[in-house]
Length: 296
Image 1 (cartoon, one colour):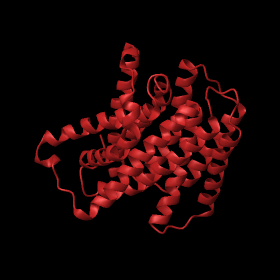
Image 2: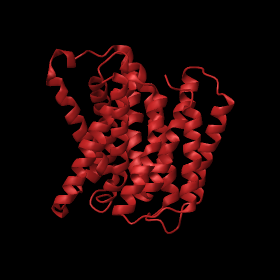
Image 3: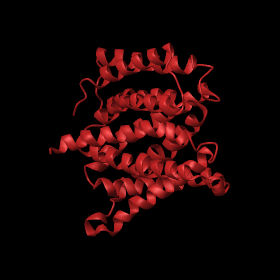
Image 4: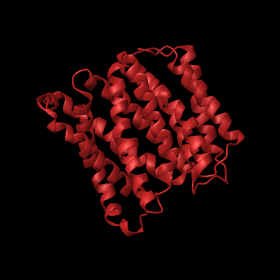
């Protein structure tokens, strides 16, 4: 199997898990775990799993160049800490379908940051795509349905949009590191640094968790989030970015609403309405136009 094919399959699997994670996380958060405590557990355990690779031999103990530490720290901040804190605080306030739709703005933001970082000019097609995508995101924020299964969808959608911005920065910033180091080496440092940033925000909620209230299904849900939606998704994404471009990795995000909507409708009794459909169409159209020529 070609490396590019493996990379595309990795992105497909990662976004399938991400899409499932929207609804699964809602089954235990915030009823059993506050968002910050949830993130604390997720990042801590995922970092532990990534660092097990240290015992894989000398090839997994590459020394990081001094000049790369600032970029690694920034990736830990934007790709793990800010990304996770904003996303789960937002998901706690909005619905899984809304959250997944807001994440569709990530490819558009990646396009903007790639343009800035590499001095590429925005074509008219890309500009139209940007306008369509932002319009869809704003439509969802402003006209959040009052009867949705969410406590504050407007604020929640805004936080998820800020999360998408943070994640887009991460996708662009991590690419140069992938040209120098193994994916597992990069991601284990990113998660360790990210955990340092998360620690002050999550330690209090973590210590307040009432583990005696957990049922077997709740432990399975938490395990899936840690192993599936964190460990494998980050590993698969960073593996794919080593081979493909950040724009292609970002473009796969538009599959998430499909997975999230199906799962949310099955398990959370959510429904689609005209606003959600229009927002999805606008954002997907924007994603396609922005990503159209960014295939390398």
